[in-house]
Each structure stands twice: as C-alpha cells, then as structure tokens.
Amino acid sequence: MPISRRPAIGSMLHTLLSLQVDRRKGIAMFFLKANTAAPELSRIRSTILAGVRSFHASLLLALLSEGALGAVSIQLSAQTKSADSPSAEQAATLTKATAARDAFVARIHADGYSCPIPVPTILVEDVPSFGQYDEKTNIIRTSDWTLLNPEERAFFFRLSGPGAKEADVHRTFEQGAHGWIFIHELGHWWQACRSVAADRGPYQVEYGADCISLAYWREVDPAIVDTMMPIFKNVLANALNPVPAGEDVEAYFNKHYQELGPSPAYPWFQSRMNVTAYDEKPAPTFAQALLNPFGN
Ligand SMILES: [Zn+2]
Image 1 (cartoon, rainbow, N blue to C red):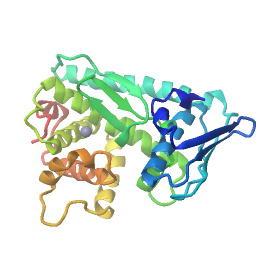
Image 2: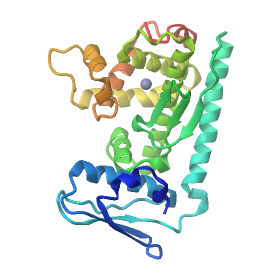
Image 3: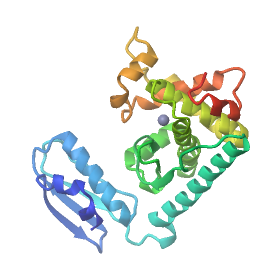
Image 4: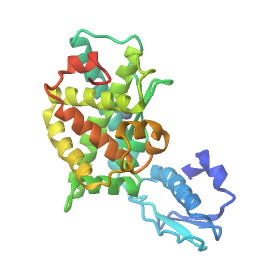
C-alpha cells in the first residue's frame, strides 16, 4: 500500500497491531492497541487517510472511541474511473495553478514591477489552511478537492451555508483555495520579492497578503470578491471571537501566531483582515497594493 512509503508510518507501528486489506471489498482495517490516546488516534487517522488517498475514494471511517480496542476501516473505491482519479484532478489543479501564477506575474510586469527572485514552484498537496508559501524554498503549496480529509470538506460545507450541494461546496473551495488563498500566497511571494518583511509582525504580513489578493481580484475577477466577502463577514458574525476580552487583536495574533496558524481560530483572524481590507477607502489598486505589500 502507498502508506508504507509515508515517513510517518514508522512512528505509528508501535500503536498499529495489524493491517488487513481486502481489495475485493475495497476495505482496509487497521487494528490499533487499546488505550491509544485520542491525539495519537487522530494522528494515525490522518496518516492513514493521507496514504489511502492514492487509492482515491470517498473515505468511510468507523471512528474509534478513546481507549477502546478497535479498528479504523476505510472504504477504498477501487472502481473509480481513471478520469476521476486524484492524480488526474491534481494534475489539472497544478496546470490551473501554474496558469494563475503566470497571470499574476504578468499583471505585476504590466504594472511596471519585477521581482529579483524566480517565480515560486507549485506543489499540489494537502496543506493546512489550504495554501502556504515558504520563503526558504520558494514553494507554494496548494490543496486539491480530492486531497481534503473529511474535516476539511466539512469546513467548506459550513462555509457554503445550509443546504449547499456538493457541487456548490466544491465551487466555494475552488474560489477560496485556488482563487483567494492562492493569490494571497503569491502575495507572500511578492512580499519576499520586496524583501521588507523582517520588521513586520505576522498580522501585518497576513493583512498585506490579503490586500494584494483583494486588489488583484477586484481588477481581474470581481465575482471572486463577491463570493468571498459574504463568507468572511459570515465567519466574523458567527464564529466565536478567539481574542480574550480586553486584549488587542493584532498583538494577540502576533504573540500566538505559531499556535493560531493550524487552529480552528485562524479563519476568524483571516476573515477580520479581509473585511478590514475590503472596507479601506479609497480601495487601493493592484499597483498600489504591490507598492505597499503590507497594506496601509
Ligand atoms: Zn498568509
């Protein structure tokens, strides 16, 4: 199975008692030790899901209750048509993301700017918060619908509102991850191009990337702005404000950035930044956003 190639599998062997794969039924059973702690179960589950994705499928998990001897069973739909296989979809995502990156860079050149570092390399893989730019490697990671785990899909179902069909949710994901977030990550690349990030706190860096994404989509495809803004406003209106009363939002974010990044509170902060950027008057043009890559 592909999971044997995952580096994380080695570290879970002390917990994994046995593995049975029934290819005919398309089921894999993972038998785990009793009293496996909940965080460990969650980690194992993610590792298994990541490995099994190359079989593709909608994944069916019988969840373990904490401390019980049990099994995680995963439905592998081996009969998936090749046109729907993750590799084909991920290849298509990479092609689209490459075109989006090149269009963004072309727009920068059209506005009379250039960057001393090369355009970033794109990797399609499951990534926390659905996008990430790493300045050290100059790599942008972007996710794909076929790579999302059930929790991540559930997140987009919630964002899409009650009664949303899978096609609507998929569209929300495309506009969010491959529209808004992908350009936000390119915004971080642009900040690196200007090599002026060092003295900025994380809040300002994130806010600046949002301003770049907003100004870009206002000029290139305002429909993306029209889709995303109600989502951000909705998150702000309905999600719990994670900042303790009396604390300054930006100072709190800067102080706890490392823990907040992968936490469920992160969308609240990003939503606040995006709504603030949207309310800025007069709205900066893309050229102005490039000139002030940390916002005003
Ligand atoms: Zn960011």
